[in-house]
View 1 (tube, rainbow over the protein chains, first blue to last red):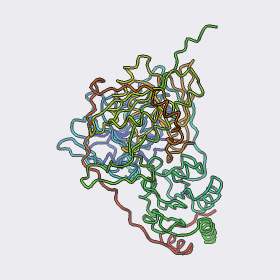
View 2 (cartoon, helix red, strand yellow):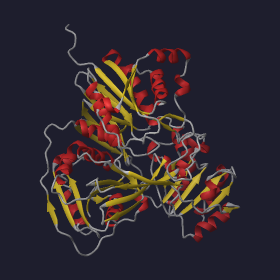
View 3 (cartoon, rainbow over the protein chains, first blue to last red):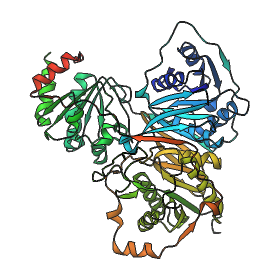
View 4 (cartoon, each protein chain N blue to C red):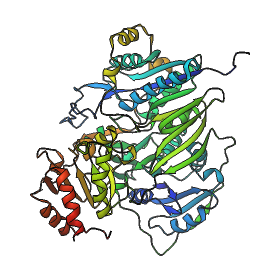
Length: 326
Length: 277
């Protein structure tokens, strides 16, 4: 097999999700070529970093002002060309990020190929060129084992980052090759602007500690007033259950669960979260789970390593005070 | 003044009837034969598709008669008709049912996208805007909108939380949910939009809100055209094989602590220290 891995980057850094995608691509057991696309002032620096990634056998890069804010309509033609007949690639791999999951299905459809989303394991059988994946379905209530048979010549898949470790760097470097961009004249979509949420906290998807709140936080004000001091003292990102997001206590971008962010931090603290299966699907791979809830029968306690049955409005401030005193 | 030459907006909203995993009352059970889940539970519209229908109706509230039509389309077994009726009660004008045989294998996103392409090709007035959910919450694939846009070679705006359409300029301004924030795009029509959640409720079905008697009576009179995959000349045979469906691995948990002090001791034991403030 020969995988083409789409390596995403932001502010000169390769996304950690792409590093996990690279690890998944390596598990196919063949060659792995990386692909970096971007604007004129970014690509060079990213390529220098990408060349050192362990597991890459080659690196392609393409530079165009049209790739500065990658829009599927402009990046798709480049991928279609790289995958056109005679190309060596058997797999196309990316993280399940918002930009890659917008791009890959578009490219796959244009090549009349299916795609497999959000995989948690991959195994390739070289004897018949088939690849078998597992992926969560029904909001994590079930796991499907899916096989892309030999009749699918190029297998597209996106990778759940929490299921694969990030590929490390190494001392040696691979060769990099520049690929001419494909300029799209008059692209149908134009990037207008990107507003990244400014926060001193770590980003939810990659944070090593997460403090999450649920419906029991009552409203946006108490949600913030209760969770922020705890997140501050732990250096944690803030997350929320879908119930809390639906009720307007927290922004959609903070939602942890199958239809929101999937996280697997060192520490996950579930505050006033009952633990619906779709929430558990988004956090159950966390290393340590702490739950504080006054309902002793809340399902969250079944997955918690340390469950405290208590009124969160008493327990959380006490916890903050005592952590501060340490 | 001459009447404007701008073409009026025809909106298509693809919807899916499925098991609603977000409803607390719906229990998902994996079948012992590992071929799938127990489908003998309540089915209703994919909640992200409800948001799409609602968005189309709201667009008409803003753009008034510049929106010429809102058509809903579903590709599924006979009972999908109920879901079309729900969408019509929410304010769509007419429906298309691409009927699949009861028990037919569920089509993959690529098959659905091809069927939608064929439906669009059959629309005499054309389609300017497709609005659909960002993912169905049964297979959680999240591919169909992007695939349709690719097949049509149209603009796409995924995970949208806000859509404004300028019918004169034939373009749309879309705000998208991206990792870490928001992104704004300007897209030329025709366009495929997939809807995200911001500011909406996903857990509560919209049905009760729209299930007023007058709306239901009106919906019954609205036209639904029935088509078949054969008529549309699309092959919906899955290209991937589902080998098995199993229960997710259970996490070992259940340990309790009696007090905040005990909790702090456990955190210490795990090497978790507070950060310097």
